[in-house]
Amino acid sequence: MVTGGAQGIGRAIASRLSDAGATVVIGDLRDPDDGASWLELDVTSQDSVQGFVAAVVAENGSLDIVVNNAGIMFEQDFETHPAESWNQMMAVNLTGPFLVSRAASPHLKASQHGAIVNVGSIEGFSRNPDHVAYSASKAGVHGLTGALAVDLGPFGVRCNAVAPGWIDTELNASYVDSHPNRDEVVRQLATLHPVGRIGAPSDVGDVVVWLAGDESGFVTGQVITVDGGRLSRPPLPPIMGDGSAD
Ligand SMILES: NC(=O)c1ccc[n+]([C@@H]2O[C@H](COP(=O)([O-])OP(=O)(O)OC[C@H]3O[C@@H](n4cnc5c(N)ncnc54)[C@H](O)[C@@H]3O)[C@@H](O)[C@H]2O)c1
Image (cartoon, rainbow, N blue to C red; front, side, top):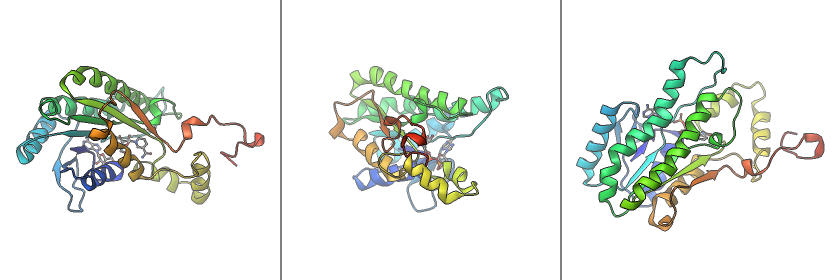
């Protein structure tokens, strides 16, 4: 099962898992509208999560892989940050993976290949301004990943996470598209990455497939950064020839 799989990174994860031979069910607030197998899911609702997991198992007989991908992101000044929007960010990004993993756990324990893959973020490690709730939620996802690896490991269930960098999806396209010099933004974004480009949803999907499969059977509790090397290069001033902002 892939939460938030109707579009963006989740859709690519679902496609890559399907290519690798998995039977995939997308759980999302909305239908992907492309024929992919989908059931309605709100990861913030315990009832919705319980019903979704029960329906997936009833339909397919078993459950081997859970990908906690559903997430939201918005910017908010810290001192005026309403508690309501903080709680909403936590509900989707952090409590959602907790609820889904908890409901799926008995089925994953019964599987010979139980694996959870959470979608964190490089913002769980390093932060942009006005991303207080998002950064905290993603650092929480990274912590949840290690905790589930410890608690579920004795039952044969692994738990890892990916921490994507800048990936070309609707979640951040609005930032790029709203800039008056959009093409220059795209060019400068690419220069922030040692590999010379921003990421595609499939870049994340490929790593998730590996973490979800038996080839990574001795890997658990890890957060794998998928960012084209962006976090590996601390910025230098452009005048020193860093090249990341010129
Ligand atoms: N795009 C990036 O650059 C980037 C970078 C790092 C991490 N991420 C993370 O990757 C994940 C996917 O991001 P994306 O860019 O594909 O976002 P997106 O906005 O394109 O897609 C998110 C999906 O989650 C679904 N969703 C939202 N709330 C939900 C809920 N309560 N229950 C069920 N589904 C819900 C949406 O309907 C949507 O289909 C998120 O967790 C995000 O934080 C994205």
